Amino acid sequence: MERKIIHVDMDCFYAAVEVRDRPELRSEPVAVGGRSARGVLTTCNYEARKFGIHSAMPNFMALRKCPHLIVLPVRFEAYRAESKRIRSIMSEYSSLVEPLSLDEAYLDVSHSERDGESIAREIKRRIRRETGLVASAGVAPNKMLAKIASDWRKPDGLFVIGNEDIPSFMQDLPVSKIWGIGKRAEEKLHQKGIKTCGDLQTFNSVELSRLFGKFGSDLYDLCRGRDDRAVVSHRIRKSVSVERTFAKNLETLEECAAKVQDLFQELEEDLFRLKSESRISKLFVKIKFADFTRTTVERSALPITLPSALSLLEEGFGRKALPVRLIGLGVRFAHNAVRPARQLEFDF
Image (tube, rainbow, N blue to C red):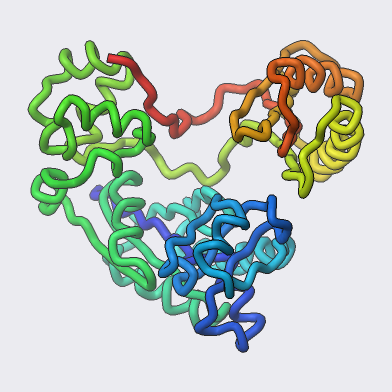
């Protein structure tokens, strides 16, 4: 049976929900995120992107690029509600729906007698009609290519990669599009003159394994458009965390400890709501200093208590004699999860 995988990706999801609910903002540059100068943008609409603004950009930098940018607070409950409606639409077309986040998911429609393109087009149409939001979709024989395809003609895009298209499509595809390759890996590949998947295809599997370790054998297939990962309807959660960026840098360990107390209570509430049966393997604290460098301290076999969190904080805080702009607190679960979409980081 020929595989038919659809990747649905909502366009500027959080910002789109805000603009839909506040029509007067249509045609205005809109972003969603922390509203203080020290906050970070979660997403922004296409009007804002024309000014060079993007997700994860600090507010002060975004406002410098676009002084009339409208920054709205995050409303996760609203986004979760819309995500649930969208997922309900998808589930009418397949029992194999794998959410990646609130705004994107894979569907395996291989069982359907209909072609993947017509199903994807219908899902897009229904999402627009029933929620007032716009989605892009990609259709392909596997997950990697379907995700690449959904981004190919954004916004409001639909792109199909058939089996017969794969060899020519992969030839000029930038290596950065391959699942598992991060920015550092891309830079190092470029230093070796490897810019496209066609360039990677000149290496055999032994050479790739020598260069990239265990990931080399995967890379041999991926650069040729092969990906046998299954669409999994229930993904295993690997971690839960909460974090806060502060409007004013925290100068002392005591100030940081007070914030960790609040974060610990929030983490406990999230764990209670999650009701996960997975065993917690590690507690961790993440710190971002005033110079934007980060450090993470994590320990296994620690009780999940406030004193444990404070001990990790003290260790991390002592690593640099600098004020703190962000603290994160979380736990990691112990289980054998589905193969993670790791970022390839290597040294030649």
